[in-house]
Image (cartoon, rainbow, N blue to C red):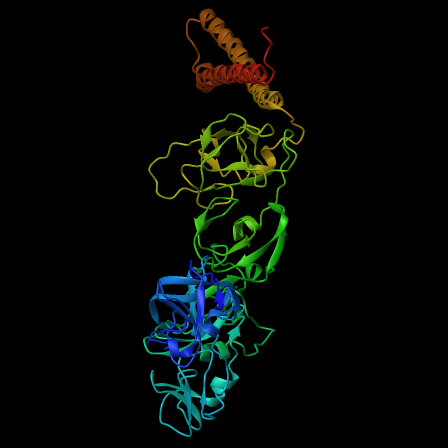
Length: 564
């Protein structure tokens, strides 16, 4: 009975054939001639495998690639070790990363054939390497002249120092990149450290999945020790960063938080790479209240852009990342903590001064974009002005008149708009607190602690708070009106006395006439003020009526009357 196997790469059974049955065919795994070896064959499909090739393991963990590789019959692929293209062949494949490794490269040992002591097969190169005593050439690993013994690939004309070839590790775990870097031969390479682009065959450390290259010289140089007192090796940059004072005449920006650097910095002056000291010293892994179930790990180089789960900013900036949930936070959101209470939600809310996504308010159910109160964990969003604890009118310590919340403030056409509290630039489309009489404007964030009522629990309390503020203003206005009225009565008495004296005398003395002139001017001025204050009283009363209507509407919406 013939020996047969059922191979995973072929639908029919394969029959073990003797050496003399060979007809000049080639193995579909290693592409070597069948002559001289027993082989498995499906003669109907003309599919052949050397006996050892037919017994290759179906799955393989290889140092070339971090994922599990599966043996499959593949078409039109390129081996990512030797860079040979195949129309159809057995190869080890990672479907997730689209990674291919032909069977010869997958099983290539680091060994000397017994019959040839001067030839070795090395895992970094597809062809045999021949030992030579001395040759004038440049080492394809370190780039230095080949003085002394080395190895030569006669096919590729690749020269490598003996010490480089025998001492370099098969893979390197480098702090700057999360995946292992594999030592291999590349026809084209682009070193991420020295930014050297090469078009000749070179030994490099590469992550095939992320297309990340690091030449041997840079890999060895970056493992040298640094001065720990003034330097750090940060995972966001290939070179050491030196602690420096910020003495720059021009404005420099932190690469992490994207804000202007104002204090001490860690800098790579060669690359013009700068980090705030506070950003540079943040830990590699944190536990954050926005994502309490898993830790977040610092990632300097995401493979593709992603949206921050806090503010919605979509880019490839520095992030803290949860690989398991694909949850990311940018550096600005990492520094935030939930701190504002909302009685109808179990978690504290966070105030975001600026966001980059459209949200639906959980109170008024309107869509909007911009500043908001937010629970990141539950994706609950509230308009700033819908939060029950927010005062719409209040007195600020920096301004004598009350400030009113305005969702949109029409502009005068100026290109530069500033907050009068912090004196920083403001977004012309963002809501503000505003005094119309004095043209005083404030960011929401600059007055946040003062506009929140800590004891407010529902919408009716908000209306009462805003009405009480208006009533306080009304009392002050009425007091000023009473003073004006008393002054006006006094003016009438003076005027009556003067007219009586004038009627009793045919000739009016010039002296009383001169005394009446300043009183007459004061009377006219007080009359103008009285008219202005009367108009303000009417406006305030109208605002109070509006707030009362708003409160009644909220109460009806929150506690609807059962019509049944």
